[in-house]
Image (cartoon, rainbow, N blue to C red; front, side, top):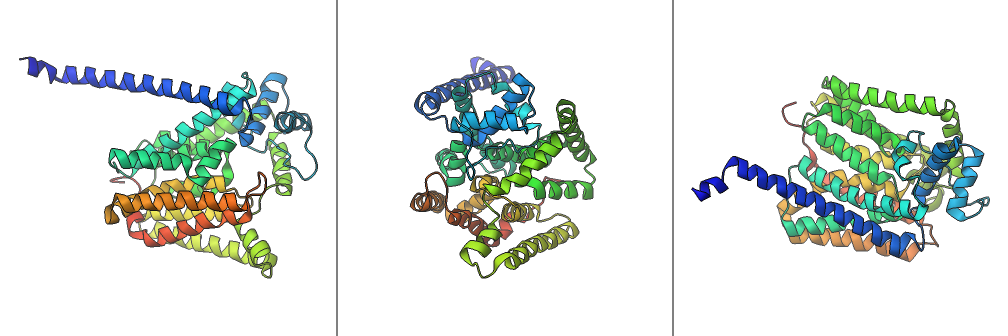
Length: 412
């Protein structure tokens, strides 16, 4: 009798609910302790989160003082937070340079002192990386053993573009989480959620501009109108709210985008044709960029005419090409490569076992950090850092084509 009561559905539901509550409380406590430690040992001494600075200070200037975040006065305030003085010519000008609606994401933190806001942001990014990993694992229906899962989660936080992204407070991590959520929701037929999440990825458009086109093309071809509608309505709301707040924000945004090349890294083809093989010059850069885009267009055309049977492989290729041809690049943008990497990791695990997978992860982790430490100049990473991971990804896509050649979702 007692055993029957203990195993009754009501008892099981109660136990499951208590477990969920306990897990939630544990995560809240862990988050709070992580924020306290990050503030005490990092941001209270050296604020850091430098890519967060401009967005936080710009949002603060708008919400507290009514300033256009793209204005000269807002830029001076951002520089004061970043440098403690106006920026000098040739230095990073720390422009806001994101779509205006990014201020809504940062708004909850603007009333805090910067050191506390930065600490919370950095911890949010850590949690976002792990949450994104878990979402992608569920997307691909892979449940690695607990030990391997723990090691992969640790690797996810420490891997060079990810760890550096956390240190810098990079919004690319939020974009990765939203992209993972988009794909997961599409795979589970939650098209409304997917459309909203995809629209939010545009807070950093250079990371996902080709992926957004691919997913919309896929959705239109498959008549997933709810997804398209949710994306369009969310974008409409974000843009509408932005125009209501600052009617001329687009001109300010474009002006800052035009100024961006003066102090930010160029594209990967530019590095290859102007620094590593300067004889190729601009004609080589243009040819390389057009060849990459033409190859991707052919892959899209083939994918569309094959019924999207190899969607995840095409998605991986799109992520790589997006980061190669974007006019301005950053190694922290490579965080989105984690989506196809998880599927490649699963393929390696099933073929060669956990030891081979951990060996690959350790090799990638150590080699990229070692290369960074051997070539870094002050805070500036060397151009060589932009090359290894895209090359590894292209090799991985070639090696694991069969593993990634699968449609998005079941029964669509």
